[in-house]
Image 1 (tube, rainbow, N blue to C red):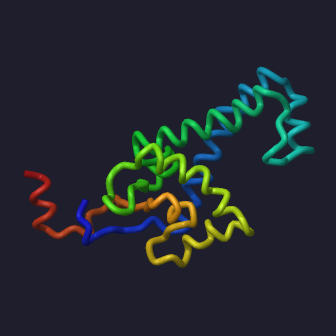
Image 2: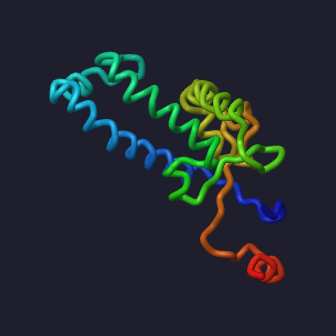
Length: 164
């Protein structure tokens, strides 16, 4: 990656990627929840929207544990989730701009709590930080970069060098 043309993924791009990932998780988990618990689960869910409430063991496994493990694996193996890929973003090590270690992935996940409290300030921080880092990015030493579709920021010599 050419370090002269680093583009950080901004707040709105990252928020769009997060909503896309959340929609994908719900799309994949809701049918399983229905098969296991039936329609009563969704009635219960509407009345009990709380991160720490679970309808049962399978609810906790399907809606919390498995998605979090998949996200961490995707960060480590691909540097992104499907939502981040759709929005042309990649999570990299802040020092090397290379892939994340397992430690960074789990640190990033567990330090989301620091970004949530108080009042999602750590996520909002992305909007005005010069490197577009949330608190979880700073604590895990990660960056989220944006790779635009076009090559407008590349020099002609760089473009020609990659095509030969």
